[in-house]
Structures are given as C-alpha cells and as structure tokens.
Image (cartoon, rainbow, N blue to C red; front, top):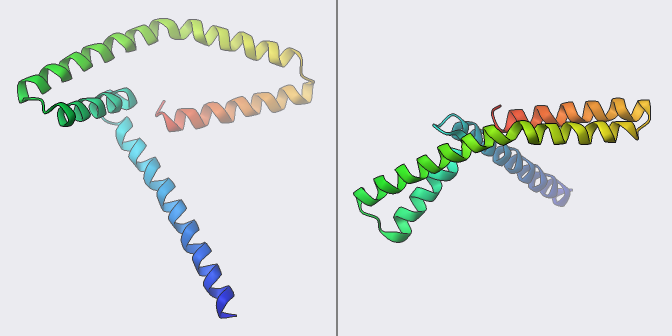
Length: 127
C-alpha cells in the first residue's frame, strides 16, 4: 500500500512539474512578445547578448552591433511584409486543392482543423 502511494505521489509531482514548466514557458513567451520587436526582437537581443559575452565587446561596439541588428531586423521585417501576401496566396491555393479532394465531411473537419491551428499560432505568437 505504501509503495503504491509513493508511486502516485511521484507521478503527481512529475505532472505538477510539467504543468508548471509549460505555464512558465507560456509566460516567458508572452513576456518576450510584449518586448520591442516581439519574437524577432527576442532573437536579436539574444544574439547581441551572446556576442557581447563571447567577444568581450566594448560599450561602443555593443551599441554599434545593436544598431546593426536593429537595422537588419527592420529590413527583414519589411521583406516579410512584402512577401507575406504571396506566401499566403500559395497556402490558400494549397488548402483549396486539398479541400477539392476531400469529402464534404472531411472538408468540414479540415476547416475546423485549420481554424484551431490558426488560433493556436495566433495565441502563441501574439498575433
């Protein structure tokens, strides 16, 4: 009896840790999204910090690197905005082609799947 109680306690502790870890990760992502530049800004801040540490940058070098990364991020975001409609059109055509080979019930399931997936991505990436 004691052995099974201990096993249940260990499993419960593991599950509690997994839940706390998942919630912590979501909180971390939420916080990062709200920083300037969102996820892209997070990656840039991480790179700048890593370069500073690994290369022992001076304050002047660090400021220059941060400006360079910010400029590059702005350029890449502009390119993303430019290309995004074309990518969206390709994906829309692919979804329409997939829908054409499905039964009416499968199409309805496919649309629900797409909506859930879109909703999860928007939640995850703060869209």
